[in-house]
Length: 215
Image (tube, rainbow, N blue to C red; front, side):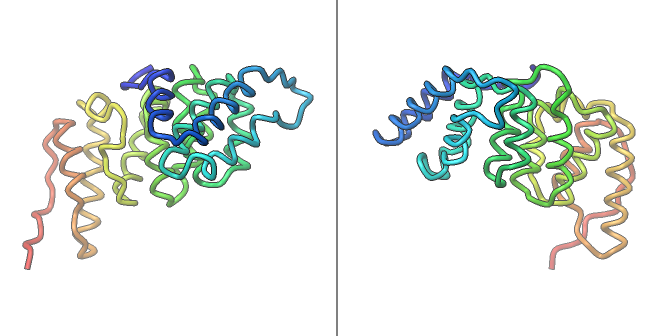
């Protein structure tokens, strides 16, 4: 996988260290249940999937994402399961599925989930969608539009995994950034600083409108 991913064991250790005793016991029971589950394709859902949904209430919003990633890994969730959980889940559950993709899916078959998230205006979903899985599997065309989506929605480009590597020498990305900057300026709107940061990574010279002077 591209990008730097924390190992699941390390992620679980950090999560458990941050949880209270009751939440740690819940996570241990949930992951044990997920690891032992032998649900076949004829089952509509596995019992552990109920734990996935309740992780926010059990572990708190701050630790729910990591708890859900640990749970998905313990269950060895396949693409069909991940897709079902994503489609049926609330935004917080969808974020966890997106964050778990590089740990669980080796090929591009889960890209429809990334593409769906990038069609939303939920900034936390967009940020989750441009992680290591997208860096490895999005085509150049779709990856460029993902970067522009971050600029449109105000998601910091620091969320884009492998940004420097993929932006290097990308003339088409540089052109798109220049066009976007010119559109913003023509509309009397400021050009995001992140746009200049990405353009500097290309590194290609593209004429940009001058920055507006601050009053």
